[in-house]
Amino acid sequence: MTAAVLVIVGLGAMLLGYRFYSKFIAEKIYRLDPGFRTPAHAMRDDVDYVPTNRIVLWGHHFTAVAGAAPIVGPAVAVIWGWGPAFLWVVLGTIFFSGVHDFGAIWASVRNRGQSIGALTGDVVSQRSRVVFMVVIFLLLLMVNAVFAVIMATELMGTPSSVIPVWSAIAVALVIGVLIYKMGVGILWPTVVGTIVLYAVIYLGEIVPITLPESFLGLGPGPQWILILFAYAAVASMLPVWLLLQPRDYINGIQLFIGLGLMFGTVLVANPTVVAPMLNTDVPAGTPPIFPLLFVTVACGAISGFHGLVGSGTTSKQLNKETDARFVGYLGSLGEGSLALVSIIAVSAGFASLAEWQGTYSAFGQGGLGAFVAGGSRIISDGSGLPLAFSATLLTVMAVLFAGTTMDASVRLQRYIVQEWGALYRIPLLTNGYVATGVAVAACLVLAFGAGGASGTGGMRIWPLFGTSNQLLAGLTLMVLSTMLVKLGRPSRYTLVPMIFVTGTAFLSALQQLWSLFVTGQYLLVVLDVLIIVAAVLVMLEAAGALMRERRARAASAATAVS
Image (tube, rainbow, N blue to C red; front, side, top):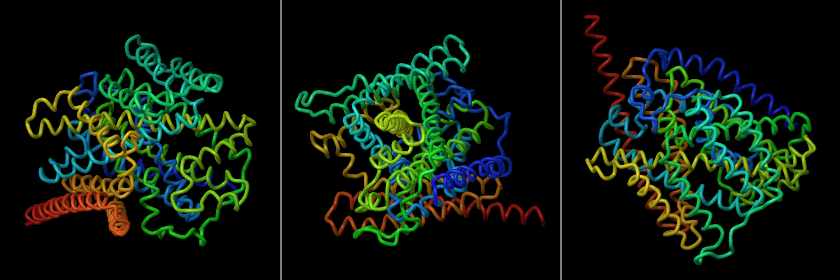
């Protein structure tokens, strides 16, 4: 098997999904209305609610949901063979992730731009909203604390990536001012900004940057973590047009070019896939493929975090309701294509099966390091670019993905705190500065409280992310299903994915619970139980609301007939 075949089949299937399946969902299920007045217009404040060009908004949504997870998850899951991961990424993107992400945006737009957690109160019940928002806050806490560690590790490990990563912020600020304040068309800022971003990669090679070995008793890693959270706090308060939109958009362009380069060099070099299609000789201690595959490969197939972004930031910037298909479904295809690239890099980027087996000697091996190593080798072989430059390019891609996700995620945490303030009538928490302070403080308490001076405390609860994330996706699909039933529309296109995702996530959570108990990780046991109980409560509330709506519609239909 050659990697080019996987590219052609995978991308071909995703494009067909967008052309036909997403059109069907848009016209027959969500029934998008081009004349509907979106929250970006109805509630415009030019800070969070801003009507946005759909291409720019696609860039924001794609890069915000991508992060490092669609790279790391598939790169780890290949330990069971590339075949299962490939099938789940392609089919999951078309029939699960696309419908989920697209639907979260549509549902939020139809409910005054509320987050999926807040609108649960209107669609299901007030009790479920409170529980759901706690689960969401915990998930965002994990994402922010861990992504800060991932970015800090990459910035330390590849000093040549520091200048390119931070230059993206300056470029974004200039683009935001040019487009929104000076009325410059989008073409030339995009072209010049992209050229600058690629040019500074060479500058990064010439001028690598490292932090002091010790500053106020902190090593380089925790120093970077503090810098990243300080930046994220400021970024989450700036108007979306000034930094969030243009940063995510220009990063999206750069990353899209990076994906194109990766896919192009695969077609040119056409490396052989050395990893087995189905690995029957997995290392000792590797968990069973079912249900763990569907939790390990989360982002890239379906992810509850995507619903938070779609209903948290993207919906507030949607210019027309019909743009939701382009932004949401096509954004999920971007995520799926990134996961596909990751699978190819770690399956065909090794010289031999023996080398691949050496990397995948235990479950959890591979990940971002294997992606950069395998991907840079493919790019170098297919394009002639130096191997070191190719590695820097992929590292910058990964860090930029993680950075844009962290930007959006801290903003989302701020929204959750403000929604709590409004719900419980605590005016102080509705203040943006206070809410941001609470959100960032919670992340730092986890990072340094649980991790000490290393700042890696988020890693202690990160094992819970996979199951929590997928349970959240299932809950989001349940909310969408309830909305569709209330509107008298077919709900099976969201219910079937909900049943599958929720079922595999619950099985994984229970399996993980036993593993944590046996190994004595009692803090994680307690947190895992709380997450499972919260998910069950919300699901029961949602199921009750769903059945009530169906009975009400059946009674109404019977009355009309009689």
